Image (cartoon, rainbow, N blue to C red; front, side):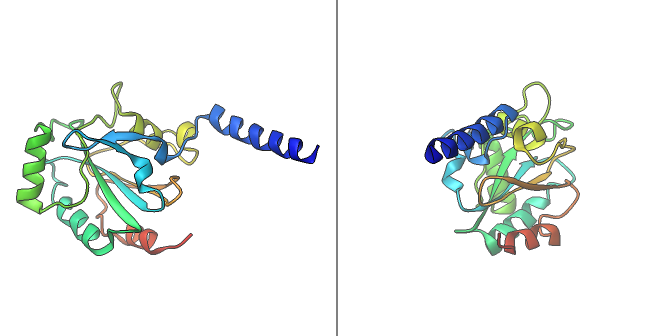
Length: 182
């Protein structure tokens, strides 16, 4: 009877969580910039900084700071994933191939870049719906305000927070989060 009751509680908690729409970051799969499937579950156990990027933005020099952050902390416990997006004043008009070339030639980017997506509007990518809707992520509502908005994902796939576009990727908010242990 005790085992049945415990199982019933676990089932009820799981059902309630699913009914609310909360999922884990790891439940999503995206495409790399060269068209390969990339299940985010591959990143379990790492902190992940998710950034929507653009090549023709006033914040584009943040690519250099992102690469610096990746070189300093990237590895077993942390990574960055860039998502090029053309949602703000046509500031990412290039193809995936053009974006790769731009990132390598101008900034020597080595962190993973994903295919170009939409981060707002009716065609918003499912991952960004999860990042921006409390009903889905269980933590907070947010709107992607501009290019280079940063979302922090904890090792367990939960949303830790958001850092606005104008704040540097090497800001204390981000570096202290990377160094913290749960």
